[in-house]
Picture (tube, rainbow, N blue to C red):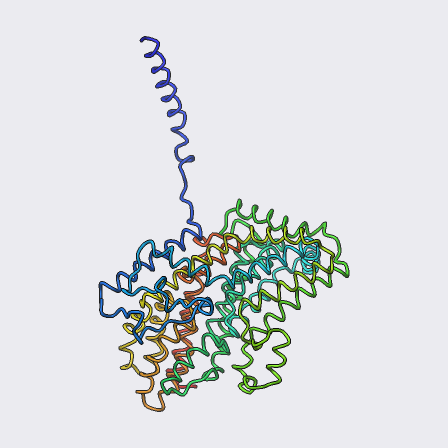
Length: 543
């Protein structure tokens, strides 16, 4: 028995000594707060969406329209071409409410709805893997960085403006998921952090979206919705002022991101990322692209492969530009249809979706692999590497689609639109313009689709505009077509309900919770500047 007491005493003594020895270090060894991952955030957003459906139901049960009601406006998702989601008992809530486990069921719809984008992402990721395998991307980046020695900062504004042009001309956003794996390592090798690359891509495209000079999915959709109730609005209404706004917004963005990029290049401690994250990303970028200083010169064969790569991206951009929207004669032109049929039958240039984009990048993969006599087994291995690298991105993308499906097919978005926009008719053109900005911003949180939000709110707003005096109607139309994209652009910069910013952060190797305040800061600056200029234009009646 005494042996047992002795053993217990020794255990207690050892525990006491251990505790005492750790006491001075309590502050240092305490577990630090860890930023939530993008996947954790999007799961939280999904359950928030479910909560919204219940709140709307209990606040006003009669306001939630059921699936068979003609008032239920359901914007089409990609997969509606394959599966009739808006008529399916699986995904549409008859009561307007979703249960906790419905999140997984709606997630099935999210998987199908994101398949096209996943195919596109994997096709580009595989193309990048092929270019890395043959040494073309490494040699190309080395040539670029060496050519810009001590002038690497030029890359930041140039890329920002290019992404802004994509955003303002055709609503470029999801397409960036294929470009991020190229842009991020290039900017890291050039001496910047991954956060710089993320901000260039995300703030660039959304800054362009905020003005939407010719974006058919934003300005085109809203002007068309206004026109359905008799408002004289088109994609050209107020276009001169939107060009001015694009120049102002993009200039602000270039100054904002270039200032941050300069600080990081000068001293890495100025980064929003930790030194450990920066070093990890440097190792990743070096493994991805190789050492710039020791890279071999670009040979002719590799140069030809990079030319194919560049031409494929050029074709993608050309195919996404809304030519038929800009030039109405092309819509019925047999020559244009014949030219389009050279690439895809029955799909006109300007109307390509991710399935077509993924196909052309897959073709480039096969062409380059054939050029370098790459065996099928090696090509399949590169595809597996691409799949492995993009797994997290694809999971977040599929989960993010679930949010839109829950809010749309519950009738919540339609209910909110009717409720929020029903009392704006008493304001004049200036009043409508100013009041609509916060309303559009709030709705954009729940309806990240520019086309979807326009289809729900446009007819309501158009009805109120028609009640204004004739001289005020044009002013109001210009104001609406200026604040609508501004609200959408700002919300898409940092609000996680869109899901896309989370996917972009994951692809960029950036913690979303850390980068969000930076994006939100610029969004706030842009909101103040944008609404002030628009209010001045409408108030002074200089349209």
